[in-house]
Image 1 (cartoon, one colour):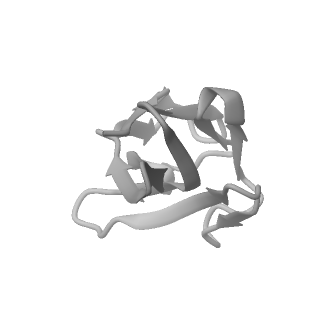
Image 2 (tube, rainbow, N blue to C red):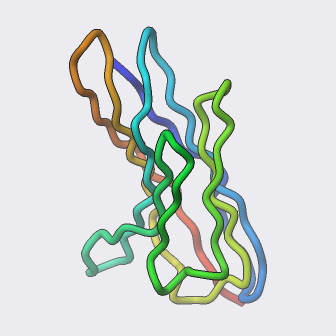
Length: 119
């Protein structure tokens, strides 16, 4: 099984920055894409940013220009650099990875990391 683990959440003031990390681990697997989602209380989970194996990125309109997704291929790790944070960015952030392992597709979620933007 490929495990996905997030880290880096916390409390930050409006206008501040935070970097989240998401590491995939396991044996003999490849990654097609990794995604960051977020879910605020009483709201549906929404896609925030994605990065493919080819390096293509995609962002939700609400975070364009403020968030940047990047990756460290040897470490199987994806980062979400968040800047100019707003109170409405407060949510639990989840990483989702997908790819192939032993000829079969895999997809897994991390446990989530809380981001709170408040003064």
